[in-house]
Image (cartoon, rainbow, N blue to C red; front, top):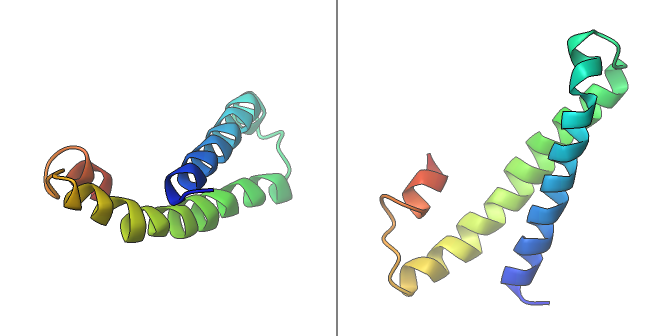
Length: 82
């Protein structure tokens, strides 16, 4: 699997978690969600999505895009770095 394919699969996993979170939203708003479940969701986004996945984008994807002529400031790279 190429680096781009790996990032794409990781995006799919992150989207699945976002969809799961949206189904939990009514229970969260009513205070009906258990602490461990909510902690696991937050941990996923903090560690997997933000630290692990985004680090790979910054280390692999963004430099490749820049080499191919995408400007590092503005859209899309500059916006993603914000």
